[in-house]
Length: 589
Image (cartoon, rainbow, N blue to C red; front, side, top):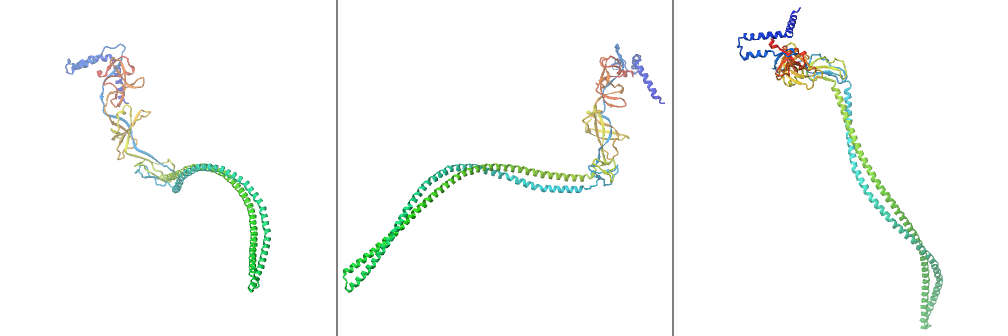
């Protein structure tokens, strides 16, 4: 049996009994023994330096109803500059390398514990038909790129149409005033044509009157022709008679000449014969002239008849001309009215041309938008094809799974022939050089920890390592209200493993603190950790504390004055304001 703990417990119980129950006797014994102890040290009993502790130890007059407690007078000390934590080692990196596509593994496996370099092949998947898919995607990309020039050419063609459409709009708009002017001119020609129609209609009665007059002159001319024709036989008879007389006169003249030559006729007779002959010739000439006159009269009468007939024809032609002029004037009126209608139709046509040109412009603009949409479709087709090519290439890249960094295999890589699906584990790679040592610091001391501060750690097996603080969390753990702290330590030989327990010491600024036994700590009604102290008026007072460090000698706490009387026994039996009668451990010892 272990008797030492039992004996220790009995001694502690006896001491507590004496301190609490027999306190008065112990204090009296202490008062009696104190002067002798002081004199026995060989010092001057009358000096102030030796008498002062005796004066402090003298008890005051007990307060009626005060609770007797044990107390300790504590003076703050500057504790060392280290923040002590407990934690564990952790790999600087640990990655589960997983497959991003499906397929069978065609590479030989690597065994756990093997060292791999960054980019080293871990698993390779059978490509299958992915190469054909890539070629098909490349062909679609080439086809999509081939459609782009055509789409851009259509866009350029469509963009060239709006200027022509605007020019046609301007031309059509310019044609409207011209058509309106033509309408005014056509309307102005209608009255002129109607006046010509009236004038042509007025000429018809005069032409008809002239026709009647010409018809009336025809019988008169024919009568004159008949009269002239009737005078021709008379003239012919006179001419024949005159010619017969000429022949007779000529015979008589010849006979007279012969006779006169022979002397049988007188010269008078010859002259008479000559005169008769001359007279016959004259009559013949007169008869001939009469015949010619008669013939001329016939011709004149014929001319009169023909003139009368010509006048009739002329009058008829005048009537026809007048009627033709009337018809022409009517046609002109109709043409003028038709010109008005044409001008109106031209105006409508010009306005329709403006509307058509504007519609063509809108169609051109719509064509531009359509061409742009076609170009955008071509570009989107190219982008889709490029995305398909990139996806096919990425799919082929995913067939080979490489180590993301240099480290150790924590597991075997996938076996040859194994079927991997997206998300299936290929291997786990960890990096142990450098290595992290992770601890959690309470919120009371997190302000003392700085990034870059020197730190050390003692691992299981008494191995000690040094490093620096590389990370201090800015958010507390919601359950423990502690903050994560990470140290970075060299581990070139890979002797430190992931998950080893470590005791961490982080260099920090020193702080004044009190060393108290753990039993002196208590909680108030609000659950706040603190100690009961003796106030200046000899009453109990609760003061909260911050625990800095837990050691074998006790607990280092902060948050108290530099000098304070702390109740170490009986603190659970008093509250704030309760009178107390403290007994100090220093005096008892």
